[in-house]
Length: 288
Image (tube, rainbow, N blue to C red):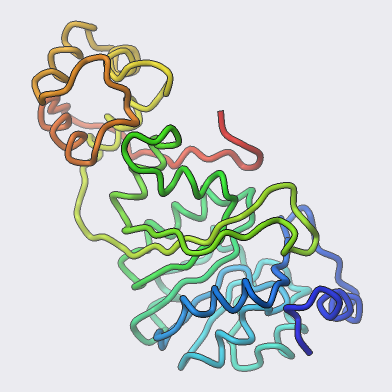
């Protein structure tokens, strides 16, 4: 049985009376070349946690490559199939947004790898969960909507760069691994996907830093000075002075700033306290 082939995957699902659930965002990867590429980036980890294994297309191979593997799956219909495809993998039935990931990860040998073909509609919340748990794993190999991935990896000066880029890049070193066209999934989604590698960083950034980033990126078409003034309710002249004090022109836009620029701006503004930011991804669909 080779579930990486579309025909065999369809037959396997039918045998168990399972149709992909659109409500759960189920799009199963079925491409031997793509699976092989992803597996090539997943070696050397005694402990593996997979979020959303589905019928076990990646799980089958991953479970044979490590000492211990755990998979978190929200759809109980997958249990019977996973017992066939990956019998040595321990399956936790539950919502990845609600289970205690650090607790689960702690039961795995180190170094630990997190793998997930993330449903598009919960990509943002899942990334937040992974970011909070980053002290408990060494690497993550995550598949997501291509447009989201482009935002996450965007460097200074790129149009796609925004608060999401900066927030995640301060928490991880991120690398683009594999582009995955929509045709390689069952059922075929409306958008292409990409696989990114996340290696946790452990530097500490203040709540003020993220608040300033969120404010500065609030309206990408406006200048940094305008965004800071409007969002943080600063006098326009004061916002301009703070930007100029770190050697930047007030007409600069947020996507042009480096991490060092944001840190310098935080020091210049020295706000007292701010709320912790959210990774403001939509539940589904595109970005404005």
